[in-house]
Amino acid sequence: MDVEAVMRLAPVIPVLVIEDAAQAQPIARALVAGGLRALEVTLRTPAALDAIAEMAKVEGAVVGAGTVLNEAQLDASLAAGARFIVSPGLTEGLARAAIERGIALLPGISTASDIMRGLDLGLSHFKFFPAEASGGIAALKALAAPFHQCRFCPTGGITQKTAPDWLALDAVLCVGGSWLVQRGALDPAAIEAAAAEAAKLTQRA
Image 1 (spheres, rainbow, N blue to C red):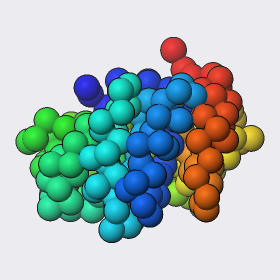
Image 2 (cartoon, rainbow, N blue to C red):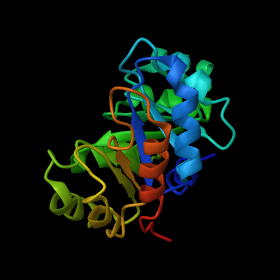
Image 3 (cartoon, rainbow, N blue to C red):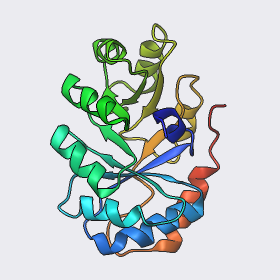
């Protein structure tokens, strides 16, 4: 599955910080039941790789690893079952490693120079991150104009309320959202309801 196919699975890619791998499958089942199939598990906790492995067992889930910083983390994520890779930035080393392994990569960018470096590497799909802190919608509009061939997944500070404004941009295929799974006690019903609301958002054809 290439990166555009991943981005078109749903208008929102949940950005997940999993502290307990035992919660991974229930979270994944709830998100998929709500209509969100692409799931990004960030490598921010010791449980992350185990969580990816558990979520990968859930029918319909397309599980990726987020906050991937280097080739070693890329390989560990692939070994755990990740089907796409998301990084907060763009380095030549990580990009070339992903390309060599044939894995979908969504690297983070926030400047024109980032995008140009990505284009030089043969990439055209990027995570605009941190979206709100990097200037919000106005900044992405300005960046997208000279790079008409590129498509973006804004992530960082986006909410259920503001997501439609981002998705209205021609260059945006989906957004990354951390609001779908609240920290604390696991509530699959609430997660499924939040996912169902997010899945209703309009995605670009």
